[in-house]
Image (cartoon, rainbow, N blue to C red; front, side, top):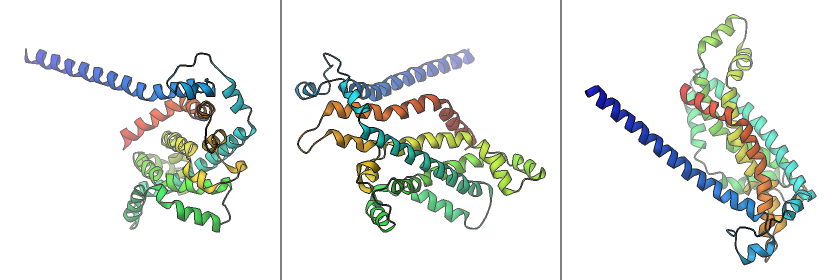
Length: 286
């Protein structure tokens, strides 16, 4: 009888947990989907509608010229090209540096391992905007101001601590027997890293690529501070083309925002499986 009661209580707890999870999922969907849907709908309004009725008014007639205007604007594609260049180069450098730093921290024992790891973790607590003025002065002294190349070092520098922290925990869970077997086959340290550790760390690297990629794609403050000319600005700054000193075209801004976030949404749709696998693998191994 006691066993039946225990099983019944366990079933009730599981059912309650399932109900709570569904409620939270629906709530989170509303929190994220409702603003996005209004942003898309506002992009289909005429400018006068946003002034007269506000953002939460459903458009009486869909007006696609806002999206056509953004797509046919050459400046938009210049911003898009710059964002892609900055993102691809920054991610490539970031993932390589993070993997090279996480490997010795996770596999080797040396005297400075603890202090180095402590400094990396401590760097995660430094707000990136605190360094805005020093980074601005540094880019001017290095001759990188008003170039897209000024954005790449900042993206890599501020994303490296958390990337190394996550990859160190991920690589620590990889069985050492695999390295020992590779060592017996004649692989040196570089061979073990590139042929064993790096391929097995692909789920963790994919997770970091998605996480940091979204942050780099949406980065605004450094792009606004370190670039000036239209030919060197990134996609988040395209919004400035649709607002003046005393007024702004809200409908065009929303259309531009919608088109700006589409690449990240498409990327997440195709890479969500790898993202989930990387998070689960890191949770199990960490």
